[in-house]
Length: 230
Image (cartoon, rainbow, N blue to C red; front, side, top):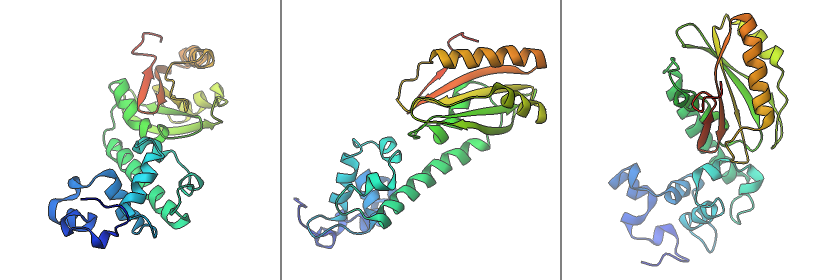
């Protein structure tokens, strides 16, 4: 069936997103159909699903790419106004927060993958760089996490003294460092190596161990510990 220039109400009942969801369940819907449910309506020449497909196409049909877009980016799609753009962003943010909530219950850190689960929802979609730390007790259970700094697309300033001060104040036995590379390149830079070594050396003096430094790059991550660089 060709849907071009047809309104959703003109489609076969089983192919309309709402009816399809009710009849076959949420998993039967495509990404475009889910977005169509969010935006509610299309334009004079496009159904909501066709408009949603266009939005996805402009994000390379990738939900991670879509999650990185700002309101003005979404509004570049003809038919997506401010209200629809806000609705899409809100839905993606809820999904991100759900992933974070799922991880919070898993308090103990046993591997680099555990650290990635904590920070990927926070950092994976960001267009700028942020540096965070995870504070752990002697059982490697999470005490707290803190954002240390926020920068541009190519770097951020890190104060090693602030990191160690927070660790002391929270009585942390060990810390994990984490930041993102918006470029998508997960490999560490010389600056990354330098701050890692500085914190390892400073931590030794205070009996605070640096367990790992994770670099998040989209859906990938790099672990200093896994690569034997600690």
